[in-house]
Length: 270
Image (spheres, rainbow, N blue to C red):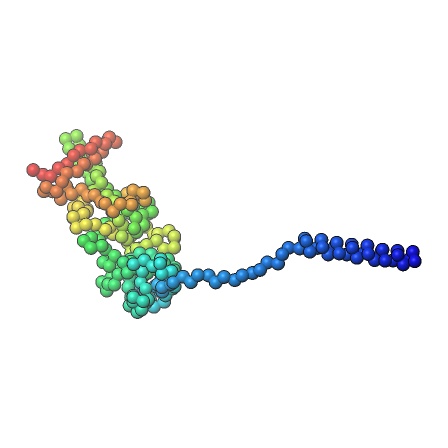
């Protein structure tokens, strides 16, 4: 009888221990996570014409230069070319000249394209502007570091004779002028060093073109002075119109004699 009780009590203890272990495991178990899949909201899109790859300045567009790409409809700018408004734009723009750099995936804007059969230079000139070339050399062009689309000042140096003998006159005749090309180079190629050219083509107004032409006849040397990017943000330019004579204005000429500089105001002839 005692043995039976012992067996029964041992079974009860084991059962109680097992129940406690199960209860402890259930209590420490993390609840199962319920995964609920929520569909993302649909964003209305519009197909926009974009550059298929980087397109450099002066490139003629080909059939593979552009492609259609979905674009959020709310982010479509009025300047973008959309498929709904012009489904044949990819073919229509073939042969157009790029007047500003496009990066891959950048939307195409008609304002950056020129359709012209007369050549690139005449195509990129803004209305009312002129392109005129002037001779340069390494020592008169910032050591060859001037590149197309930089802004420069044009400095004229000439000899002058007065009662004290020969002197040199220097004068900035044009300020903040855009460089269109150096020889036949219209842009820097992949960051590589540019071969120093002998001719710089500048973007000028008709009057500035006259000033430069007059200075070319008067000067012993014309030098290009590279402007800082910070000083070149404005498109405002200045020119020494007094070189044209008449009543076109006055200017300041710097006379350098025996290493001493003196500014002299020069006006139109009376």
